[in-house]
Image (cartoon, rainbow, N blue to C red; front, side, top):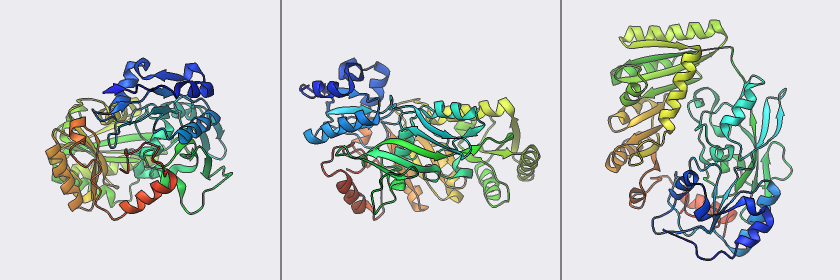
Length: 428
């Protein structure tokens, strides 16, 4: 690939954000460049620069400039998930919100927080922990808040607290033409006709650039314990069915493939991992009941508490989001929870027992497409997140079979008629 030969936009951009916020393509830090580079087609002309606005005002000015000149923009935060979705080409510049990373308001008594979209999730959680509160999401910890919303990256805490959409109270965003708009909490202006928070969640930056987000928070629980059950696939599925239909209330509950069980040194076979968080008496009682389920079914079991438990979930998260082997096909799946263990015959990963959503890796595209057929058979889907460019060029990344494609295209046309924002990454 070759970088763009025309740099006429650089002086205009520098006049807005300053020289230290504009990096020519060949001067971008290597680690960051490698993450951004994964989104481009091999034949693509590369952007001239990466721009880091520090405020909404700078971002509005930059986006207004791009709109007037019809420059095509790739939007990102820390670029931790930029390789998800379709490959793109002919991008004029990259805009990163990573320097818009401050907390705007933390209303401790109201259990809400408003932050700029470039703030990293791990930094926000660390700040909230000081007041014994937390944001009930479990995404890639290196993600920015904007990236989490744009990709709908919820994680295992969906079991108890719901999805990103359920946590989101309000957003502010910049439209393709540079206008700023708001929806939900802290509203100044609303765009009528759409539930914009739901519309922007999972839109992959194709409708606007998220600048602020307001979330509901939850108090941290006083006690926590994790139960692991391992064994044959059919028995582990049976245990998951029992847990799902019981009165137990785990905050996280997932099925683990045999390879992930092995990687985490949890035993052999498939695994069921369930975390209980509440007052100490409730946690102890619920963990005991699930252990009894495992004992009655003949499964191997273990209990993790305190620091051992925290370390276990951190290792699990590392397994899910590790860059690992770049030749593997990483996918997001949705499948009926009662059929979840069937996909583990084709790939390795994790599936949430209630939603049937999960992250799986496959050794070949043939295995991934076979798993897609299986998911669709059971009312679900398989989206290819990460794969070699040669694979993404040949297959349909999204595999969408519903009837809403024309509607999504009309919405994209209404919000971004010039196809300026993340062109082709989500809705081609």
